[in-house]
Length: 330
Image 1 (tube, helix red, strand yellow):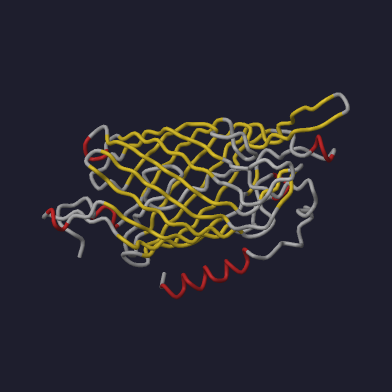
Image 2: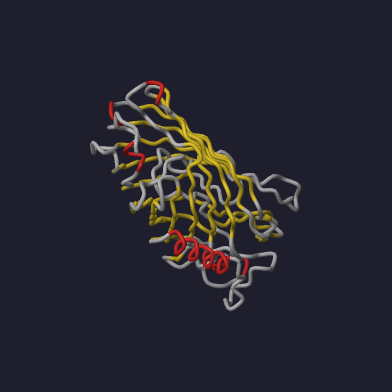
């Protein structure tokens, strides 16, 4: 892949992502719209020590990385229904198993192109049937694809001399979520979502951490009084290497998406979650990593699951591997 070809592909896809998709039958403009992405965990392709919080490492030049993150969610969409006898709840999405296939390609030592294809392997719930009287959820669904780029502003380097060492890094990302998913399954949004972000990470002895800040820019979608629009993005993760050479590490992370749109009832909408995980990198090159985690909600906002469990496998032949050698990369 050449840089020009990759940039042209991203530019074309960005144009497609902004199209409203008027040919689809699902109405996304009413007060009860299913054009909401119920899964707020959008993992990053490439190297990562956390499931949600991004880092600064990119794959090596002309290298191709792959990852698969499988996630189980419990009740991410709960509808509050009103009736003459009082209120009730409907589990529009009760249980859901999603998988995100991710690819990353190193254009150079600092630039990485990313692609993520999420799918719903299985789900159950009422959908909007209690409100619209229509059909419930399908067993499976196609979700909105994501693509973008990562640029390492500051790279971590471990040299033979202490003066040559740099144990922290900084990266900028720009991602686009294209409206390719099944809108009537809470798997696709009404239009493209633009996601700029900045992430920093570092190490201190056995300990490591990362922080990410950004935004998800989208038009407003209404769902039974909840107004889902543009959001800020914040994430923080800390961890410790339990065994040498990253054979086993533990991590704690949390992420939140404060919604910038005023709600009709005056409340705040801040989907937020926490997660504990164990990660192992069994190969000497550390290019293979397996991470298992579980956590739950920090807030009861719409699209916040009460429980979430994740399993991620990553293969990232990268410049990050060179950062663990005793000599700096050329």
